[in-house]
Image 1 (cartoon, rainbow, N blue to C red):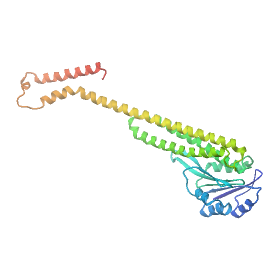
Image 2: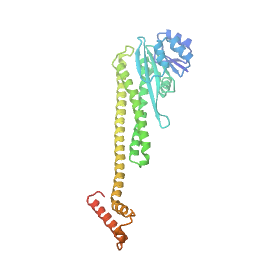
Image 3: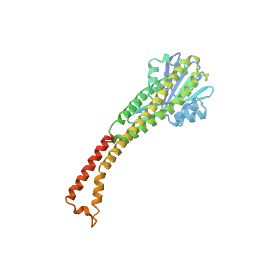
Length: 324
């Protein structure tokens, strides 16, 4: 699907033009254009990216292919930018959606294969009040990026809740242990994926914030520095959650080790307490033909008394040693 918006002096003057009309608009230097490609067909991609804007083949290839990592390339007349929006839910878990930008002085082309709340909210904004964000395409690109980064906060909040839930599970019954291990691996993978996405985006924002690209006007440098600050905060929070996750795992492993040691201690004590009975029973259970003890009066009661005395004596000794 192709969505297009034409602006003049901060006002929306046309929308959803066909490719022929977009060529005419491109020739008018006083107009600004935003074209959003949402899950376009190959024909639609070719019509816009090649025929109307004549972007570099490598940039087009990068836009149409799925890229796991953010990047920015300067093609002199425009910047090609790959960024990622994120979402998180209990059903779908952590996932990312690529959002590609072609940022020129008088145009902005965005490309994404899945619905993005960032793009939808921006479209609603420009339809209601476009003046604040459409006087420059670098300003509109920043607004999209800023909205996308703001959407990271609910993801962080959900991941924080998941980590805290995992902490609570650590102190539950032992039958939860397989679930705890599985959830630890899932949360660790999600935090690692988030950091792998955020850190390159932070580097990209840093390059834009320090004025490396001439297409980004100096007046927008504070805005991109604020964007960089938000990405740094997200990365720091994700790193803190990751450290907290490892501390939770240490507590869990120590708790499991303690419980195992307690079980071993009980079994050892049971073995020690029953040792006199085992020794006496084993000795008199050999069934030798000539065992003088069998002929003693009250032999059974003597053996039983020996069992009781030795067992009680061993229990008293273990208690004095504070082992029982």
